[in-house]
Length: 457
Image 1 (cartoon, helix red, strand yellow):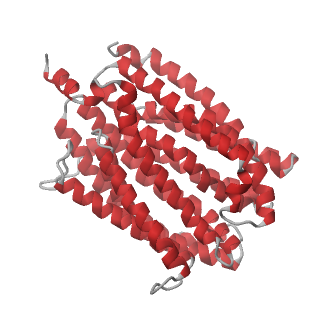
Image 2: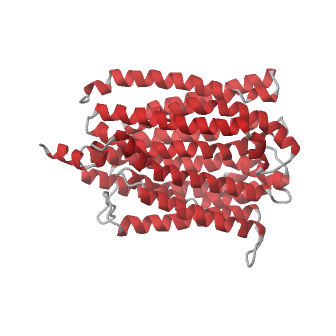
Image 3: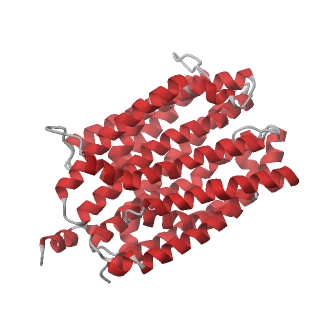
């Protein structure tokens, strides 16, 4: 038996029973990302309970696209690192896997510098585009400037998380996120409302609590990376930037960045379309907070199956790639069916958690019921995107996301807004998701007929 075969057999991703393997690798990530979604929701609930909570919620809704852009760069780069590490480990190349992990942290720091510049110079011009009230504008500037300028903590943490997940370690990444989330949840009410010795900072307090949580998570991650025994090793001794490694990271990472950044531009465009309708922008912002509670478990599943598929692609084991994909689809569908039921049956209760303004509820109830129709086709799309990322086909994942969020959803929403009432505009979400799923299936069939034919059965 050659060295590659021995290493494949020794790694659980190459031989373990698929469903238990996916659950063991995904459950920690699903749990931690669900907690992350929870603290995002709690953050907004606290802000929404302020005396001028509607303005505060509107401000965070307008701020959301730039915040998403920051997350897109952090996660997109880290996905590229994750994919490269898992493929190199699958091929039995430890040295290049370690080099990829080290580059991941360096790239995270460079990305942070970019967002410091954006936080200092782009926030005010960005928020000015919407023509919002002075209160909403000031809240948005306060929140975004702090979150963007101190985003380095989150970026380094995400890079370390993805590096460890590529090795099959899902427990420590879960603990990093839990530490940050719990810290955020504790300090949110203290800093927003001014409880005890803490000053009443309102929206600024929410931003500071978020950054402090990210700092705690990063410290935990750094200590674990350099003290705990891991299957991937980071060292800066005699480190030199390797152009080939960066190219390989961004072969998947750059399309992932673009793919996730598209969401930011989609929301900017959708906010512009909805600006003519009272409370619609705030409803959309609340929806994205709540839908993360449904989508985050699927993204946690994605983190579990991506290294499995990437490892077995590197090991040329087509049978296990297909097995991981089938199990992933079934689990994702189960998650999305539950999410759809919740949005269909209790949209008014979901909205009331944030603010019980009657106009907000009247706009939000039909919006939630219509948009949630996209959840089930989205489950399939997420798994196809995971497959393309795991096999180094980041461009295909980019094409799916680009067409869904720009080519499909915005034109459909614009047309519906011109000729039909607001309740109809929300149909753009399920229409776009269905059309992008058809495209994903076509790209998968093409991949199966080309690259996968070269793999072992």
